[in-house]
Length: 73
Image (cartoon, rainbow, N blue to C red; front, side, top):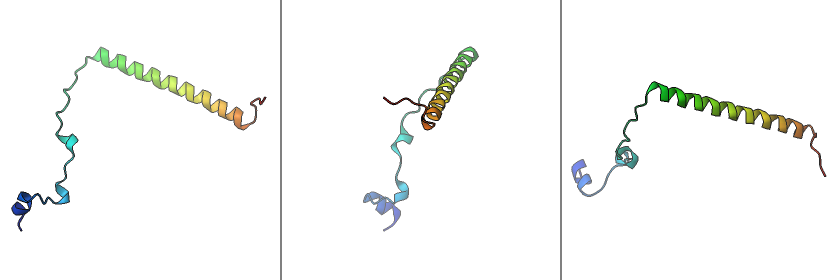
């Protein structure tokens, strides 16, 4: 059988498998002005700083815990 006959008999080679997500309609591109982008960047930086502070606090708590400074009742 040639490729056309295989195709017509629904015998597709594995390389013909397609990801359906590729064929979904692309989302429209959002265009933002510089002020909006800078505000979003500042928000991201603030969140990173908050996460870093929480991470530092958790690291300190773990250090106290590992050094057995926690109180047990």
